[in-house]
Length: 599
Image (cartoon, rainbow, N blue to C red; front, side, top):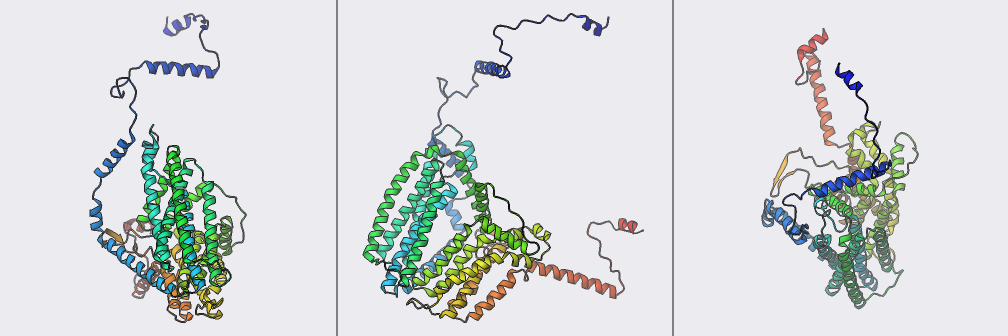
């Protein structure tokens, strides 16, 4: 009998009755029973050697200071050079910083002498408002930066290895919070001291306002850290808007005070009292903010810590290459991630107008970009009110330059994405002209609103009549617009180009001048007006810069055209001599294969 028949002939076993303890037919009950059985099997296994922390079988809790010392030892043990060695190698950079610092101090002293020459009641009252505006701006800036980064951050590796462990995060993050607070205090105090000195304030007022500004900004960072522990962003965002609006209101009061529309009656003694009150209030707010922030360090979510650390890492990489455009792109990406989505809109016209319509819709989608343009209008008025009408064109153009950069996002996309630009049936000049229309309209409105800042009116002599003031305002707006376009269309740093040997290592040839791109055009156009030269010179320079910004003077394109012309000339010579005009085979090509194809 075969095996197949034997198997078939075997009788089937009778069905067994279900046990009394068998689970029900419910799939969830079956899965739960299997999970309980696996858990019992795992509990019955012996503990692996070296895992138990002590004799009682409990795992030893990690000690945070030991982890911090371990991380420090790991980092210091893998460092290739000390801080003193790095500073000695970069002595050229240190010397350059000292020279720039000396120039800055000299500029501050010169500005203080010019401002101090005005001893009228209007000038004194306007001068007393500068520290208040600086204080409010520092508070808004501290809150904005804190909301953007954290202010307490952690790297991705720390978030993966440390923040997920059963440890007290407060002990690991406390030192970082203290570091941020100390850096904020000294940075804001130095900024307030420089602006107070430039405005002609006395030393006692400078010290009080520097102390008050430092304590106030540090208190805002501590409060932002406390809000980070609760994972709230709305209060910080509202506070930034309030302090920013208050800064603009103080600047407008400064302008109104200078022309005699407003009389505040701020005396030096009253200014000292206000500065002392600000310092005391800032200290109290700092203590309260630090107490709440310290208690909430353990409650900060790991996602908030690592997101801020990733942003810091990206910005540090961009700044190491001095690529401010890349840093701005990283910030724009973060803002787009926070927003999530936008509403789609219908298309508009065709041809060249489609780019202009796209820029208009983008500005309507992000109306907060107009806030910077509106704030920049007050800058030349404030500079003239302080008794520095000579510097009003330069400072006003720089403010407009910074405000117009966010409105040129489409132009940056087409400049950095050559493949996208080639898909459009437009030349480079046509694309740039179409995308410059919306910023040019904003610059024209800015020029109309800033004409009074350059004219003699309100009892203040600024050195220009109304006709000359219109010319200066238009040229200043053109300088800001062309500077923004220059900054946006600047090509990235070419790391394949020959390097320049410096004390800090090899650097690309265009890296050192990349930072001042845009600012150089502003200074070039406004310099003749500062030195009292005719406005025609600034107008001629602006026209030349405009033609260059359209791409007509692109060196790479000119070199390619020159190479093509030389190739055509060689072909014409060969034809004249009776030679073949066929192009030479490319390197690596097979000439025998080409002959067979011709046959």
